[in-house]
Amino acid sequence: MVNNKYAIALVGYGGMGHFHAQHLIPNVEDIFLYGIYDIDPAKLEEAKENGYKAFQSFDELCADPAVDIVLVATPNDYHKEYVIGALRAGKAAISEKPVTLCSADLQEMIDAAHETGKLFTVHQNRRWDKDFRIARRIFDEGLLGEVHRIESRVHGSRGIPGDWRGQKQHGGGMVLDWGVHILDQMLQMVPGKVKSVYAHMEHVTNYEVDDGFEIVLHFESGLTALLEVGTSNFINLPRWYILGENGSAVINGFKADGRMVNITNWDNRDAVPVVTAAGLTKTMAPRTKETIHESPLPEAEPDIREYYQNIVAVLRGEAEQIVRHDELMRVMKVMEAAFEADRTGQIVYLNE
Ligand code: NAD
Image (tube, rainbow, N blue to C red; front, side):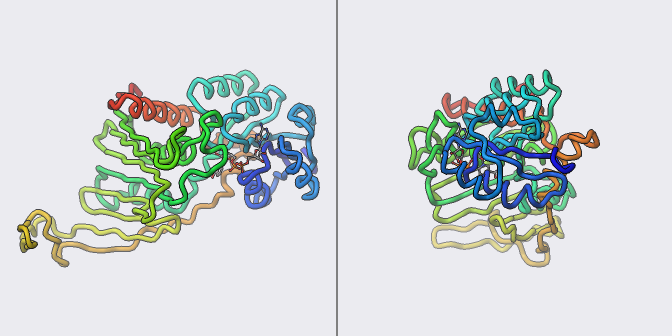
């Protein structure tokens, strides 16, 4: 600690490392960014220019008694060794997502946390996304009645980035990149066990790793969740599409605009058939205005500062960590089932 503030040492001063340094850490009292280690000497120079201690090695970082928390924001394949190294050096450890590449590696990290008694958690920051919080309110408050289907999509049109994200050895691919976010969100939102997983991975611009996917989860409750990421989508589908027994909701993009449409009168079933050139349909005829009601989405104003505030409270022994080991393991197991389903072309049944 320095001046009664918890000192954070960052490993990996790239895109997300800078985001922590500039936007996340400075906004929370009681923590500060103390020092940085990166394998790239230019990043260490930049760290010095920005007023941080530049560690020449990870060992030097671990040997510094002032460091309380090690924050790992390297490519995904290095998370495990740095987290375990930090824990064994007596530091608390925060890993960027994905926590690591497979459940066996995660188990080693959890074991190290138990052996050392030190805090180990993951930056699952998208639990604080506005679109997710709105979806969760719709679900939790039953605004559509009982929900039977949730579709969660993230679409982009830039392909997979040309860096380590396209390389298998570094834990590239969209399942490990965005998949862990949207799986974590879905498992946070929907209670009960996942019965089965089906998945198909896309390889439009990259053959080494998936550059998009669809994963279908069937919950024991009967709810179906579709999770989809695409990187070759020049027209985006809504971020969320939620179907309940009494209505539907759409949430668009990260700005999270959208609407809900609810049934007001189930008994009024009369419909004027829709006639097209080739046929006629009563089933798909639009509802008349007096039987439905359109309303705005509920509000949500999540505060991402809660993430680091929770870390401080845990270190003081005043709270439990928000992002828990069992939650991380569950996401890893579902992710592994998705890879297996893609490989075999079969539905994978889970025994949660
Ligand atoms: P990046 O490529 O921009 O930065 C990675 C940094 O790590 C670079 O500075 C690189 O020099 C350094 N590095 C590489 N190998 C290293 C090693 N062995 N030891 C020390 N430093 C090393 O990548 P990024 O976009 O910043 O992603 C970093 C991590 O953050 C990834 O795990 C990624 O999934 C995660 N991330 C999370 C979010 C989020 O919203 N939570 C967003 C983006 C990235």
